Length: 117
Ligand SMILES: [Zn+2]
Image: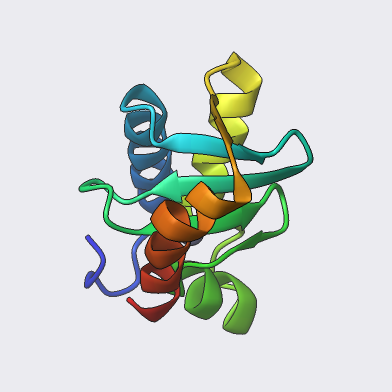
């Protein structure tokens, strides 16, 4: 219900939680562990074409976070932040060991798309 005017916070919370749970269930909550050094937290879009970088409890690269959390403070978090919390809590993060080269080649383009769309 993205276009719905003045959704009740309860309704929004329920929807966000259900989207988050689906992302966890579909194993789209991923920690890219780059050469045993840097961990990059991401939530993939449903089709897996975009990746939203998340700093747990703090930031998400999606437009919902930018407009509704950062700018207008209408919501505490987007569903990607919720999905990361949910996955960490249940031990359901998908850890992918990856080289810098592979990260740049296969993940970075999805991150760029996540910023743009
Ligand atoms: Zn987000």
